[in-house]
Amino acid sequence: MSTKQNTWIITANTQTAESILSSRHIAKLPYPCFQGKELSNLPRLDYFLIWGHGFEYTATIAHALRVHPDVDILSFTRHHITNITKFVFDLYSCDTYPIEHLIAKTRYLLKTPPDIAMFVVRNRNPKVRWAGSGPFRGVQCDTITQIKNSIRDTFNPRLADDRRSEYHVVHASDYESQTAHALMLLQLRPLAHYRRDPIPAYDLAYCIPTPLRYRVIEIAMAQLYTRLADGVIVSVPATPHYQYAIGNPEPYCEYFGRYGGIVLKQDHFPDVFGRLMVDFKYDYITTDGRRPLIAAIYLPKSKIYCIADGVHRAAILAARGNRKVTILELDSTETENNGNNPNRINRNN
Image (cartoon, rainbow, N blue to C red; front, side, top):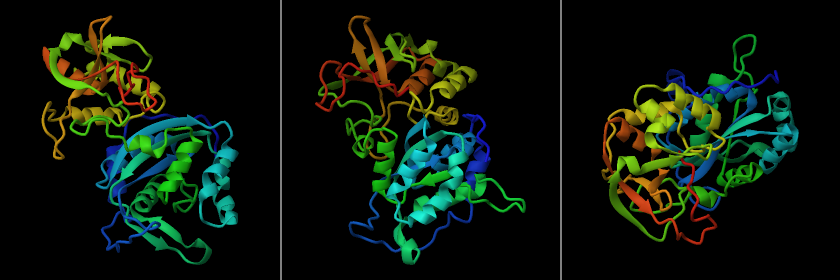
């Protein structure tokens, strides 16, 4: 197993991703509905972790997760692991299988590149059941297991006879407590953070601090600015997002390649942006009754509105020549007592 430098590819092979979903593992099978503390089919949070030797497939795996009917990507992060041996042991420490089996199964990971990618997902249909026998009997989420096995079938290294090896490129949770454990190991926010709903009437990213006051207003597009991943506040036409929207994708691809998963932790891969532009509409009511407006905070010293959520939509509107835009203004001086700096603009851009 090579330990060469990873290749970080941000463009998805959509044909390969969709073949993952059509593989033999993604089948509509009759799953009994279990209830109880251990076996609950209520929506929950899971994770997929891409190991170093699968790092180059991250964008394609993201596309496969994104188009799955039961899974929503909530967060994407990249990490350099300084001690891969300790990390592997700590990650698997909450596994229910015999330790001897886990040591043998994960030995190959000690020789993989020490860079990983992590997706936190909302699992809306877990399909939980008991699986296996004897010391290998445990709770299994069939939704996650099917996706995981399909990814492994597609991207695991091949043996000499072209069979799939067991050098797995992806690891995933079996139950939600394992997700909490992985988040803790990677020093990410706890489960409750990803369940946040800042303003239920508006379709906002969960990472936006909840204001005590907000209002819907119309402003000039020229007043709308955003804080980029490097901390610089610029007008919408000065963003790489705007360049993408006018048909020049290279600056945005370079931007996401540099900051995606590091500062930009939402699912903003270039192919997502491209699909957003198809049949784009603004200021409507979603199927669940929400209004997906651009959210911004007024900065009185500069007399501008800085986007907290929605720079991709703002770029599309600006590229289409909109001179006015309706936004959700979030109060910049007061927020819920939730530990957030009330003046901090979240970099969901």
